[in-house]
Length: 323
Image (tube, rainbow, N blue to C red; front, side, top):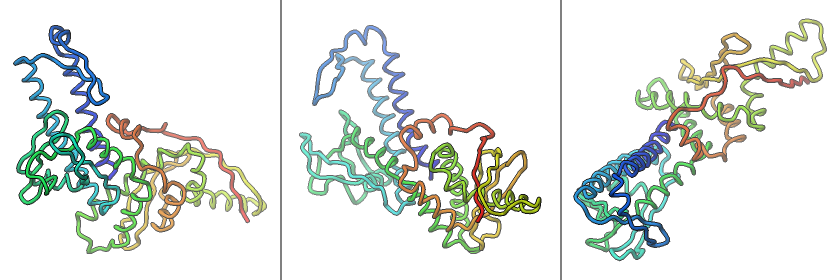
């Protein structure tokens, strides 16, 4: 799901980059012929008609059409995974630009998947028809949606998805997990449980991480206290332990019926594997980070190039208490 969100954002960012490159590559003679005007509180560069510019604009419209179709197809899939949660409304306008209603990203995606006709002109998607539906049923022709508004709502959708929404999807899948579960559902679960490392990694330096760390490194704490007791120490009080660890990786326990989350990492140079009941694990994540955006706009942009990584080892000084 996180990979799908990055993919949607990447499609838009790549389109923006191609537009920038196209603008910079225009011949100086064409650039100098531009006239700057204001339309609807926007600065617009108008060029005199030419065969060269007609070709460039046609290519840009075709690229925009492909980008919109790919983005909305993936948004449609994302909203299906979330059972429609996070869907956004986009305004519908008539030929003169007057608001005549609204539709949802999911509905636009459905129309695009089965579309028979639409055209992009003057920053609007005009007359989007599928086999049995259209943008505004009360109008035969002329209904349109703003491309800028569409993209804005796509990103509002992406950044509006919370950690609790993602955890809720995984929880629901794990609750139904058995050895008879369809393979496609198992693959989906494996991929998305693996993505938990991204949530943890992004927040390791967060001041709230201590509560999550208490769960993740509970066994390390217990071992430390056991060593103190074996060495004749007092089992009560507060102890400090210093260790290093690599970025955790997560997977589903091979025993599917156990419904456990397995964390693999290196602690103080030793490969370790810790197991947690999925309810306990998800409850902590939701309690601490549930209201966080799963991916912020900055994280979506960063994900276009590379998923950010911490150093191989993170030094931690952890206070441990024993009753």
